[in-house]
Length: 93
Image (cartoon, rainbow, N blue to C red):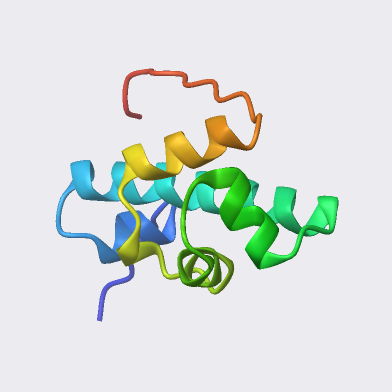
């Protein structure tokens, strides 16, 4: 049995590098939104109103259901929360 090393769990489980990169970005945004909601002490209903989504959508976010969120939806939610997003692009190692 050979062992492989991966820089991210997404690199290990996704079928392509593109899918892995997408999942990495989505997970970072989801964690930032989750942290923002918890840190501010917002209820899920208040967060839903602020982010222009439904309360069940916030529940999905808080439970980490990453497969239910597209990258653009997460960017929109982060912007609505007043979060600043920066992106850096570099060559793969």
